[in-house]
Image (cartoon, rainbow, N blue to C red):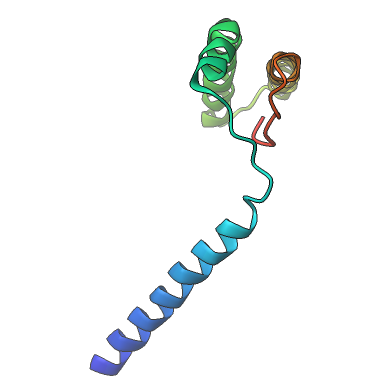
Length: 102
């Protein structure tokens, strides 16, 4: 029993440290921005971000039902893509590097 617990802890430690090492490699070339620029970006995109949240919640609600209205799902996903594109364009106009998260 002791050996199984020790083996499990060893595997967990290896996975934890391996994940940290893997995560660090993806952070090359990140550009620092000022807090003022970030605040301006947030002010310019507040309405878009609220719309995005509302559409995302509506989409999640649709997925919760047994009978999914795929036409509405497609519409919402298209609207979400448009909103994300608008947010990216604001970021580009402010000389911010848009992230891949949108």
